[in-house]
Length: 150
Image (tube, rainbow, N blue to C red; front, side, top):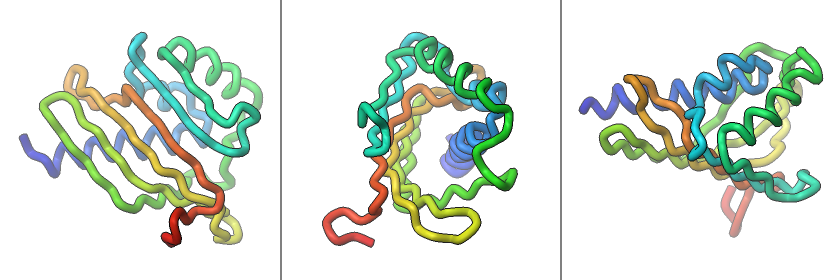
């Protein structure tokens, strides 16, 4: 296995999922996911009314996102290429499964102001030669630093 090649392909899937989500491109976004009952997504953000959102299958997520993408066809970002600043990247590849952990910093695209940081985990599966996201979790902290880290 060519670790560098596989890692680059995995990061293209992750960045493509991120970009297509904020551009509200449902076809590209959903194409990066494992569309099976075992798909899972869990996220924490203080701004959610329920604090934690979870989807226990692809169908659960698909229904919600189709509605959300349909509300307004305009993307969430002012530019076509949202910035994904990744720190502490760790990619592990084992045959047709990979897991990725990283910290993602968010900044206001117009002002550059720091908005927060998310600690993310993705598990991907290689299906028919293509990496797909099977699990996605995040803990979003709008303050960014934990235990004095910057």
